[in-house]
Length: 290
Ligand code: AMP
Image 1 (cartoon, rainbow, N blue to C red):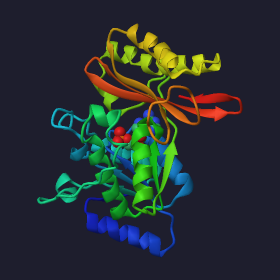
Image 2 (cartoon, protein in one colour; image 1 turned 135 degrees about the vertical axis):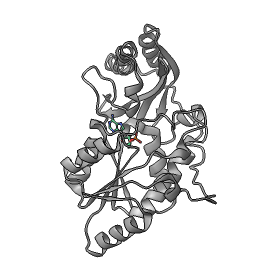
Image 3 (cartoon, rainbow, N blue to C red; image 1 turned 30 degrees about the vertical axis):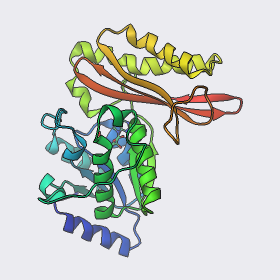
C-alpha cells in the first residue's frame, strides 16, 4: 500500500487509473478505523480496483465546542489494518494541504443540511459536503462508499452529486453493529463502561419501533412514543432528537408511507451518538432494517 500525503500526487494516481480504464473506488474516513469502515472497504474491493481510503479528520465539520482536538487518531494501527486488507492507496493529507491559508469556498446543500444533525450541529454538513466534494475532485473515483450509519449525510452527498453532476457513484453500505446492537463508531471509545452498557438502548429503541410496525402500527407519533419509552428507562441516555422522516425530503411524516428513516441522536454520558433504522414498503407491510 502506498501512503499519499499530497493532493498533486493523489490526482496523478487518479488520472493514471482512469487512463487505464480502471474502476477507482474511494472510501472516505476520519480514521480510528473499526469494522464499520472495513466493511465499506470490502464492498469497494468487490467492485473496484484500485481502492483508495482517505483518512482526514476534517476540522471544518467540527464546531469549536466539539471534539476535534480529542478525536481518536490511530494512524499507525489504521495503516496496518489497511495494509493487511490489501488496500492500494491511503490518502492522508494534512489540514494545511486541504485548507491552505486563504481557503474561502464551501458547499451547502440547502434545506437538507439545516435539519436534524444539521440543527444540532450548525455548520457540520457544510464541512462534510465541502470536504467530500474536494475528495471527489482530488481522487475522481468512479464509486465512493459511505455507511448508512450517517443516513442524513448520505442523503446530502447524493443530492450534491446529482446537483453538481459529479461522476462518482454514491454507494451506501449497511450499519455494522456490536453484538448488543450498538452501531460501531470511532466515538464509542469515549464511552465509560456504564455508558457502554446504556448505549445499547439506542438500537433497542429502534427495535421497539420495528416491533410496533410488525404489530401493525403506522402512526409516527405512536412509533416514536415506543422509541422514547425504551430510552427514558436508561438514565444515562439523554435524547437529542428522534424523528421519522421521508427518506427523500428528510421531512417528518405523520403516518408511514414510502421509504422512511427513524433518525435519532442522543447523549450517552458525555458522548453524542447517532443511530437510525430504514423503513421500506414491502408488499402490504414494511421492512425495517436496523
Ligand atoms: P467516519 O470515519 O466516522 O467519518 O466514517 C467514515 C465512513 O464510515 C462513513 O461513511 C460512515 O457512515 C461509515 N461508518 C461509520 N460507522 C459505521 C458503521 N457502524 N457501519 C457502517 N458504516 C459506518
